[in-house]
Image 1 (cartoon, rainbow over the protein chains, first blue to last red):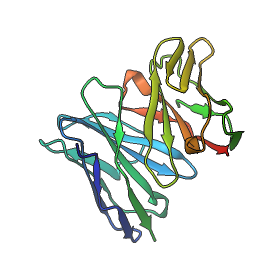
Image 2 (image 1 turned 60 degrees about the vertical axis):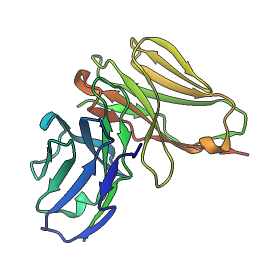
Image 3 (image 1 turned 30 degrees about the vertical axis):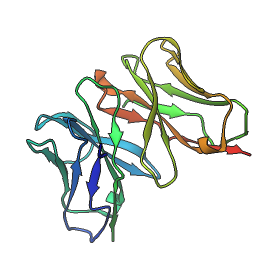
Length: 112
Length: 112
C-alpha cells in the first residue's frame, strides 16, 4: 500500500511570492492534516480537512489556506511568503475514527 | 493557549537501559495523547496512543497517563541504538484526534 506522498519535496521561493504544496493521502484515508515544523516552534498544526471540508484550524494567519478535493487529495497555499515561512511542511492522513495519523515525507520550503 | 511541555533533552542512556520520557499538558479537557518518534531527516511515526488513566504496554514501550497531574510518560525498556531519535508528545486538541498539539520533542541517544 502506497504511503502519503507530498510534492514537491523541496522548494525555494522568494519573499512575496506564493506557493502551493500537494498531498496525496493513503488510499481510503479521508482526513488530511497539515503541519508546519521549524526548529524553533516545533510541529504546529495548520488545518485538517475531511470530505472536502475544513474541520479544524490552527492559529496561523490567513495567508495559509488549504483545500481538499473529492479524491481526498489536498493542497495548501501560502501567499505573500515571508522569511519565517521557511519550514518543513508535513501532511498526515488517517482513516475515519482512527487515532493514527500517517505522515508524508514533507515538503522543505525555503524562502529567500 | 494549549501547551505541551516535554522534559528538556538531550537524553542519553546506555544500550539495554530504560529510557524515560516525560510530558505535561495544560488542557484539562484533553482526552487523547500520542507519542511519535522522528528519526533525523524523516517524518514522525506513531508509537503509541493512550486515552485512559494508567499504563498501556506495547512490546518494549509503555505509555503512562495521569490526568489528575496532567502528565504523560513513555518508557522504553531494553533500549537499543535504533531507538535513538527525537520523541514527540502530542495531545488531541479540543477533543479531536486530528488536531494535534505537539511538544518540542526530546532527543534520545542510546549508546552501544
